[in-house]
Length: 152
Image (tube, rainbow, N blue to C red; front, side, top):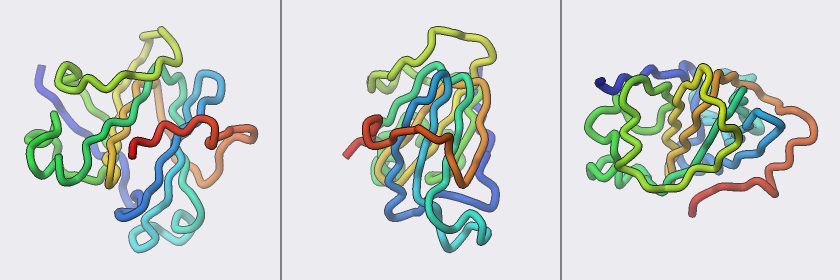
């Protein structure tokens, strides 16, 4: 089955220079926090942090691929993803065998699993969850400092 990408970030994106993504678990959900692109985002999304909530998260990981590797053809999606620096839902072949970065497992469930991919400047974030939503706030009690999975 071919790999298909659906771009999910319309009119907003992460900071192209210093997005500083981190993740925190909250029950069966995963929250991804990052700095917004202040030059692209509408005013209500341009300050502070943006948060993506992945409901029913099964697994996630940060991989070390960066923009140089992607443009150099070292990323498993270099020749098939539409563009670097975007947030996608990936349908079809997720080509997992080409990246051995371990996953952080949250739940063994496999119902309604959807694969998400966000290319940040210095790493990529991957997640398998049932849905996602964007917010300027996250659930109270989320502790990102202890759940940092950022790749340097």
